[in-house]
Image 1 (cartoon, helix red, strand yellow):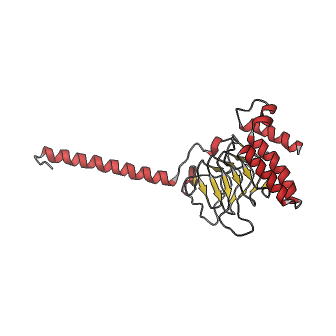
Image 2 (cartoon, rainbow, N blue to C red):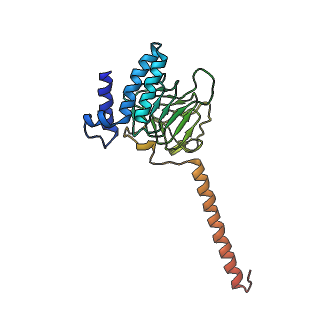
Image 3 (tube, one colour):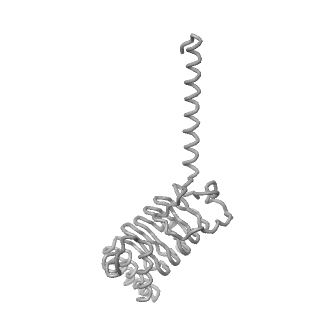
Length: 238
């Protein structure tokens, strides 16, 4: 456990420019506190001590404002930045090197037993306020923009934004998350950490459509104005 904690601290220096030293991280970062509590609670949960695990998880929630069910599976070097309002459900599975910001929900969409929460593969970043719902899979190194609502699988390396979430950026901008067999995303050209899960080019299809409508309306207004001017030149007044 202490080895994992050292890994966590080292990874935070790479992701949070506000981190100054290890002592500060251990004593003042609620995401670290929540992760320590979860590892203890998860150990109790896996050994059949369900109520003590839930009680310990509840105390961790009171301390940090982060709710992680003790049954959730979390990999190495996991970082919750800020943390307030994060909710991680019982059957959620989180890979290595994942990052969540405040207000993120990994929630379920059914009351049925069994797998009902998301699976995040390695390197996923989820921006503040995003909701990832249901037994879906978010691919490796995917980015989920702030306040997005994701209810379908996300391909490896994709960035998704909006409500409902759509793939944004580059050639993937016109893709739909409803595709049953999405084409594999191109490898990321860089490994730089993208704060809040944002990309440089967020070509949201809905935003593009609204921009096209606005541009078309502006052209029509110009044509009407030109027509009015021509009629006035010929002595006609509307």
